[in-house]
Every structure is written in C-alpha cells, then in structure tokens.
Image (tube, rainbow, N blue to C red):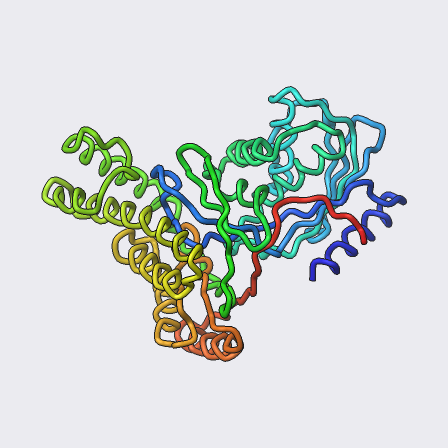
Length: 389
C-alpha cells in the first residue's frame, strides 16, 4: 500500500516540477496501546508509529520561495521562507507555516524548495495525521538543508508548530511519529520525556481499529473540564499527603481515603488517573512476558474507566467495545484518543478478523444507522528517508 503512495507522490512531483525529488520522506501516524488522558497528569503513555503514512517529496529550487502542493486536497500554496509566517484561512497550510515559524524562531535558515505530499492516514480518525504532517515536513527540511536537528527536537518543534496553529496538544503524537520503531511500542514518561522501547509482539493477534465515524461536539469543553478536575484532585491529595505532588506517586488507597473530601466527579477522575498510570506499567510487563491476554484485559479495564469514571466515552464507542467483549476472538478493546467519538483499538485473534468485522459492521449499522470504518494497522518505523531499492 505504501509503495503505491510513494510512486504516486514522486510521479506527481516529477510531473509538476520536471525533475526527480532529491529527498523522499515517510512520516507515520500513531496509535496508543494504553495510557489515555494521563499525558497531562504526569503519567506514562504507550504509543507506537503505524504503517499508515504521509509521503513527502522535496528538492531545493534556488529561490526564497517554497512551493508546496497537497495532492489529496488538490491544493497548493507558495510562501517566502524569509518572511514572518502568519496564519491564513487555509487550515492545512498553517501546520506547515507553523513549522517554518519554528525553524526561524530556533535560528535555522532555509532557502526556497519544492514539496509535494500525499497520505493514506485517515483524517479525523485519531491517528494523528497532523503530527505526521508537521514532523515529516520538518524532517524533510532537516535532511534537505542539513540542519542537524536531533529527532527529539523535531518532535518538540512539531508540537510547538501545532500549538502555534491553536491546538494545545501534548507531546505523545509527535514523539511517537518521529521516534517509532518497527514492532516496538514506546513507553514515554510525560513528565521527563524519558522513554524506553518494549517489544510489541502480539503473536496470535491482529491490531484492528474500528472508527465510529462520529465526533461529538462535547470534546473541547469536556477536555478542559477534565483537566481542571484533575488539578483539583491532585491539590486535595497533596494537602492531605504532603509527600505527594503528582498522581504518579499516589496509590489507589490514598485516593479512596479522600472520597469524602472530593466532589463525586473529582474523585472519579482522580481514581481513573491513578489506576491508568498503573495499567501502563502492567501493560509493559505483559508485553515483556508475552502475556497478550493480560494486555487485552487491561485495555478492557481502561475503556470501562474512561466510560464510567472519566466519562469521555459515548453510546457509539461503548456499543463497539461491549459488543466485541462478548466475542471470544477479541481479547481487548477500548476507545483510543480523547473520546466522544473516533476509534476503538482492538486485539483480534488471527484468522477471525473478517468474521468480527462483518458481524460488528452489521450490528453497528443496525443500531446507529452509521457505516463503520475499519483500519488494519501494523506497528512501523518512525519518520524516515525513503531509499528506492
């Protein structure tokens, strides 16, 4: 599938600019195995790059102008790389302007260049196509102009570019897109940015994403409210246990002991966060020991927590998870991402994938009148140069 995309991108480049690109870059989307809504609570996350990518083609053009074409959008723009970058009404261009802005702010100088890109990452599905766009674009310019920016700094600058656009994201998406490794998940410490790789050998099981094809408008306001509730929760915990300054140092029993001192919502949010931080650690142990069934059980537990305690699920996501939970060939499922829509991530026994997909698609259509989108994913490498074989 990616070979087709690469040929499509490089052929378009040649037709547009009359030459072969000098650099071709592959930048992946990402999944998160477990560790949801704890990136802003000093927790750990367990993401991985996937085999769905944005392909970029670049060359220098001996001017001060960047000419950039988005093949899938049938759109293009030009920008002077020496000018101060400003946002426009063309949203997709702002992510790339944000990268150029980051380069300038960090003292890096680039000349004019030509660039085209195309993607097979489903947009709006929670697979972080925006992080792949920012980081792949920056990676390509780093290679094209030999800027010598370190991978971790590409991720951080990609995150800052997204902040510039107006989306206050954590570091997980950009980090996993840049630092991903085939058949590995990355345990990222969201407080220190320390990270370690764990083997992601799912052995007898396949990773399948079921896209609910809905996005409820509750997300933005609910996200901000959850952050405020968590801040209140850790404040109450610290007041009663002065040695604790972070959820990561807190035990479940300590939260339970403070139930009467917290509002019902603050208690539920705090309990979820402490449990989820612990589940990430248990998930790493499960992967290291090859106990994929335990990993699946932890995924089900995370979904229950996100639905009942953190309250960021919705009827469609709960239906998808609860339906597959009754199927013996599915050992784990949960909502992935912020919630109120998007995808569930599922571990399905190899050989049973099509039966599960067909059954769930029909049941979902019957229940909600919505077509279920389905993505098979494998864990792939982070952003990289493509070398033609």
